[in-house]
Each structure stands twice: as structure tokens, then as C-alpha cells.
Length: 203
Image (cartoon, rainbow, N blue to C red):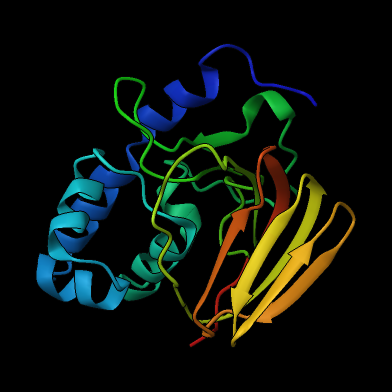
């Protein structure tokens, strides 16, 4: 597996400041913490932690925040809006949202890397997700508008939704409407990796 140069992606992500961008955009739209938290499906306390980069947002939460603030998810990953129709992202330049800061206990049971963070106005949002079964996280079901595609690269991934539990092996794929309350996790003891493509619902 190709890996990024040491700390390069993390430093770039810190410079972009996802939490700071959420707060500035919320304030510029005169949206209260309570109102945005409600639309994002999180508590006001958690939203404040996300805005101060104490806790990373989950993919579903970030998608809900983007929709509530009327921007694409690319708004949180890039400062520049180049006019282009093709985006090439070398492995070393993927932006990784870790499960926590370097000096903190992991908060999420997975990390995710944006595979297309520079192209503006796109409809699909592709991510590489690495699930860590060693992190004891109480995973709540989540839902958000749109559709989602999951393709497992390695390990075993469990999908729970609509009263079903589906075990996905390497090479397996899953497509579902993401307004269905769902959760996804690794089936231990090994870590698992998958590509997830989110398609937010157009207004």
C-alpha cells in the first residue's frame, strides 16, 4: 500500500482546519451551535469539540454539516477553487482525517482519507477508510441524505442497517440509501480497509 510522506498529509489537514472552517461558515450564516448540531445529528457539546478540532467529525456528520451550511464537502478540504475538470491525487497527497489528534486517545474506530479533495462542485465524495477493531468505540447508527457505495479492500467489514447485519469480505461491495440508519465497523481482530463513495442528495 502506498503511504504518504511522514506527517505531510496530517500537516496539510491541520493547516486547512476543518473545525475552524465549520465554525466560521456557521457564524457567517448566523447559525447557532444548537441549530447546526440538530441538523447534523450531534449534540451541541460534540459540535463545539469538532469546531475546535478536539474531535474529528465522522463522514456522516461532515456530510450533514456541509448540507446544512449549503456547501460541498470539498469546502472543508481545500482553500483554493481551481477551475478544472480533472483531479489527480497522488497517494502521498491524500488528506487523512485521523481518529484523534496525535496527543489524544483515539475517538473514532476508523480513519478516513479524502481521495478527491481539490475538485470543486463534484457530486461524488470518495474516501479510503481504515477500520480499527482495537478501538472500543460505542458506534451509534447514523443517517444522512443521499446514497453510499462501499467496496472492501481487505479485512472483514460488518454493515448493520434495516434490521440486517451483512458481513463483507475483500472484493465484496454494498450500495445503499444512506438515509437508512446504519453503522459500519470492522469484524476483528484484524483491521479492515474499504473505499466508500458518498453521493449527497441534490436539493
